[in-house]
Image (tube, rainbow, N blue to C red; front, side):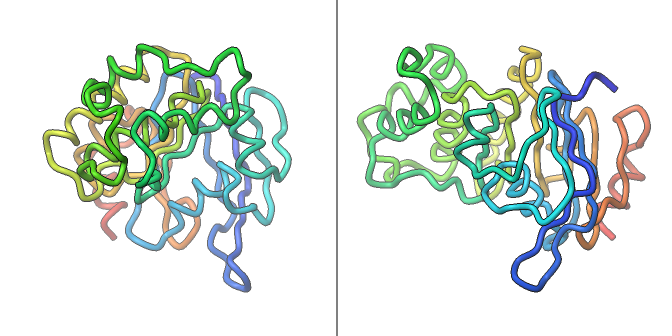
Length: 235
């Protein structure tokens, strides 16, 4: 595969006394989408939390751009170029769209405290709604805002957790096109956690299927056919 921007090896993670991740290996290369798949409760969101620093991993190693990543918090990892769009979006409902986007400035130097034009090229609707409160947007518009806010941080690694969940088909299609454009730029690695099989399969360059917190199947698009992948995901 292409040179990995991210290499995570042997990741373990606990919530209290419960072990959720059991020695997970995952890698992600610039210009590629790595899809993490599996049924509910297998550890997909926990994997993204470990990679983003929002929940500390118990063990294992992570390197980003060749540099070892300590068990840092989310803010430190955001400064290193990791952006996380969580399940449920977590935008600020009482802030305007502009203010939500500007929260992405927190991990950037002062000189970069501006919203790039590219954000509105990717998500034209946000330009029309800059003064509208985040909580007044539809679910699909909030999802676009959450991804846009992550992109404000100029990430090297973009982590997307179920971006199609609960949103209308036309916006699912738009989000798919945005992910394709970001991949084509070639300067970012993307890890996509997704239950919607057709969406994930259409976008994925590599696939990682989790089962009970461990890797059940992994490989590139040319190594795993759709039927094998579907069977692994659905069992």
